[in-house]
Picture: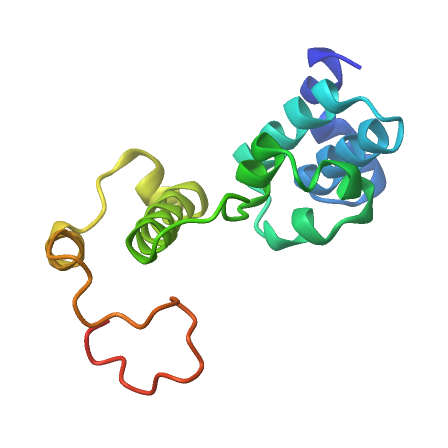
Length: 148
């Protein structure tokens, strides 16, 4: 399967009644089930660019179970690095991921800048060492999110 298949995804989409990203994701799964990591990752990148909206689906998909520890796969799936990170590194990763997902999923922000006012406040807050963020971004024990 090469670039010709991707060129014909719209034809398959019409014939099968599916969105192009679903068809590309099927191709990703076929390569993964065949154990072809290089092609699977290449087509996974293509599905994310279309964009595949449900990125969490990748991490949970059993077709990729063998690659869950691979850092390249973890990045494609939107998973945090497997290595231990500090509180600040974790928050920095989380915020960078959030900005990247906004750019990837929101049509107007793929080419246009994000609103600067909110980002400036967020990055200024982060530059001050995350003074009042909970230990984890999803900390269920914290009820004070006035800083967010």
